[in-house]
Image (tube, rainbow, N blue to C red; front, side, top):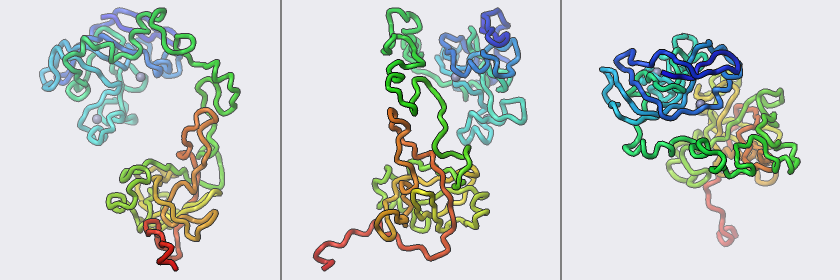
Length: 360
Ligand SMILES: [Zn+2]
Ligand SMILES: [Zn+2]
């Protein structure tokens, strides 16, 4: 078969290589009809990895099954399939939890979780920029497409028309081509939004030393829609000590004397709030998570009051990602947390306001 072979930095060639075949009863053999050149291929193409010369690359693959191993039950010869980039077993602890990118059985390096096709450090699996591809554990790793897959194949392939004919099937960009640099955005002269993709140091992050050592992720809540229905029973069930739950790693909790279920106070230079601690290794050390949307409950009212309920907005920045983008930057904010040793004030966010008459 022909395949795209890595020969060294900036040197890939279409060469004749041994045919991919069924090596194990659980394998599926796919005749590749479409494959992408991924941005991730550039890591290898430009020589930034230790990929061994001779590897067939390509990890975004689509095609038709031409042979199945004797243990394959779900996938049939003739099926059209799309194959995810990672190679997973489907039965290890990580695969069972859905973390197939961190499969524990497919990478021969015991120090590395996860495997992929035609990729540096991701196991011996040859890639799909080739006429044929062996898919290990084909029943698990093949996504079977609908019966009209052949007819609609280009629907699954990004920019297929443009790639076939870039002259007449132009993209909706000023030049009609893929643009990595925007003259128009350059014209705005925004120092916080350069005209090409750039990593800009966040205002607050764990990579820079500062007075507040924990990275607060103010996620969307699982139990309500932002702040909607916060007074309802589903949202109420997730509260801890009657307040919004804050997830904190056991390491960070221990060093602060915080136990599961404690009322804690989060603070930074912008404000403070109370919350109920959930000590869990679901968040990494140095990271805490407090979902947004707990109804605001200022303890004494007025400017700068501590929120008794755990509204994350008292801590987050109100600036957008850039003058152009204006996306939320709330996930990048640093805080400190301490255990509340005083009796915590009651949460009154759900008490109806006094009516003028009954107040009189
Ligand atoms: Zn990719
Ligand atoms: Zn696995």
